[in-house]
Image 1 (cartoon, helix red, strand yellow):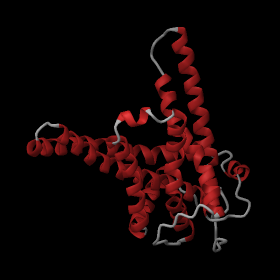
Image 2 (tube, rainbow, N blue to C red; image 1 turned 90 degrees about the vertical axis):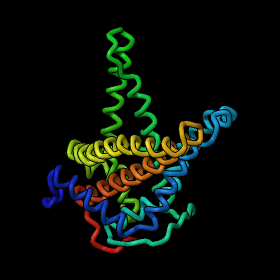
Image 3 (spheres, rainbow, N blue to C red; image 1 turned 60 degrees about the vertical axis):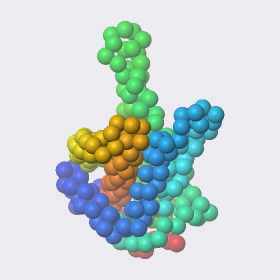
Length: 268
């Protein structure tokens, strides 16, 4: 580990400072990422459920699993390169034939698959004392713990791929994070928890204010409900974009602290 690596609290605070720098220095790419997140939110709101029933479940799952990370890959790579190399990118370029893009996107499917899986596992956790509930709860907790460890152990792989680091591989990432799993997990948890608390608080206030304004001017018809949903979609897209930047920033800093710092221009 880099002896200059800060403690968990300082690391989380630094991640928030870095997130602010990213939003200021990469405004165009951040706006594109925001539009992508918003588009996914609006799809859920405005496409009738009847449409989804005519699409095979496997296609829905595969499409939802791959589309978001595919579109966000150029932005996430740009954030890694800004934090580690100081490189600023002003243009969103989606180039699927680029090897860096292909490697990063392929690995990004791992956490993308973990997110819906985590939700399903949480639903299995129950306070019911029946034997079946106890077994499912234990299995879900164990599975969640394993996923958390895997995510913490491979987190430095993503910035390594983004900056074309020599020998970037999952084996190297696991070696870099050996003995630091709790440090990685705690830093992520602390930073994301602060965002979650702020997000929940502001979201509650936003719902109250927006709902009051819309109902005052539009009443309680379907149009008012859809307008409220659209306004909340914008806010959720903002939260998701900030969360994505925060996680990428933390991954980049952990790569510098736990792995070999990049002191020379990247290849390519």
